[in-house]
Image (tube, rainbow, N blue to C red):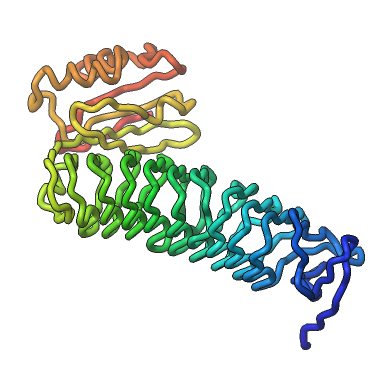
Length: 377
């Protein structure tokens, strides 16, 4: 059946093109909207909820400065507010979880957006040259971060990112004033070209959960002087630091001969060790943490779990292979309970004696060589 459209005037005298959409309506302006300090999208028309703002509904409406979208709205159309060059403030519905392609692209005055914490799907180009704030705080889990989603947001200086699922390329590229980036510790991948040509980027601390950095991720970041690749890294793309003239780069020894692409840098290659932990909460679980030798161990699963039994070891290490200062280092970083456990691992172990004092825990730690040892319950 053809889509039927009608015109309805709201209580403020604004006329809307209206289409049936689910149990309510999708809308767009039926005539040029007069200059207003605040444009409020109607929550309902003729007793039915407004559920969607149509594609290109306000495309190139350059007079708009503030838009308030009621909680009845669950969906925005593509380019719905694209090229609204004077738009400064948007209050999103709490029921919107997706920003579609080009929705706020070229909104170069947009500094204030309420409701971004509800968004889990940022489509390609959704804020391309369309965010003018100095800080972007996205701590939530994001299912999709599309290609060029926040590219060329020229005023952005500080970025905080939660866990990201799927991601396209160039998502934060060409942001010349971006100086500082914080990335949630649950992330495992830095996508390709993610911070390409972020000329002002000075500081980024990659969490020790990152296992892959894809190609050209930090290429042409000319202000990035010191860079530390996480010890957890397993896969490294080509030229991740291409074109950068740097002071120091720290990387795991397995990537000593990798082509990072930087113009110059003092390369500090460091060995890593793997900490393996097996613990039981409801079921037996395994966890692995890689750290640089000589570095503090900041987090272990036993710090947060309520498990009562734990088995831990250091991969492929025999007691006789390492000097006493190495074990002194482990005892210093892990505490008195490790010292007790490591001593007991060489002889008999008393499971009635807890060795970690913050939780109720009986544990046995052993150092493995090449052979696998089975632990009983």
